[in-house]
Length: 220
Image (cartoon, rainbow, N blue to C red; front, top):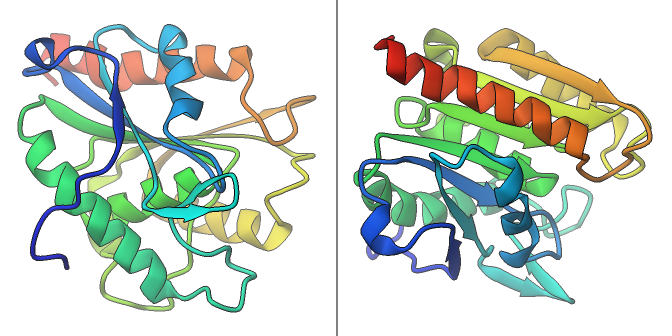
C-alpha cells in the first residue's frame, strides 16, 4: 500500500464544518467519467448523508478510470488492488469523522465499491451498485470474502437486463458472488439500459434510509 494517503479530487455535498458525525456516502464514478457525474444524484439521496464524489486516479480519454477494462491487455487483478489500496488510503482517515461509511458506485464504480468492501469488510456499512459488477479475485487474499460472508453487508444492486455494456460473464460472476456473500437487494429495471433512473434512485433512497437511518434511530 501507499506510504502516504492519496489526495483525490472530491466534490462534497456539505461544507467541512457540517460533515462530522454524519453518515458518509462515497460516490464512485464509472469508466471515462469524473467526480462531476454522480454528485447530481444528491437531490435523490437522503439529506442526512454527507456525500463525497471522488475522481478516479488515472486520466484517460475524456475522463478518468480506476483501472483498465477487464478485456484490455493491461488489465490485472494487481491493478484493481492498487486502485483499492489508493482509495482506502484516503477513505480510512476520512471515515473516522463519520458515523458510518457506505459506498455507491456506477458501472466500474460498483466494481470499486464491492472491491473496497471485500478488502475492508468491517469498515463498510452498506454498498449501492448501479449498472455494474464485481471483480473476480482468483483466490487472492487481498479480498477477505469469508469475512464479508460473516458480516452479510447490505448490498443494493440495480440494473437493466438489457444493459448493453456489462457483459453476461460479469453479471453471472457478480450474481454468484453477491448471493453467496452479502445481504442482497437486487432490482431489475426496463428501458434504463446503462444508466440510472429516478425510479431506481427512489429505491436506493429507501434502501439507505432503511439500512442506515432507521437502524441508527432504533439502535440496531
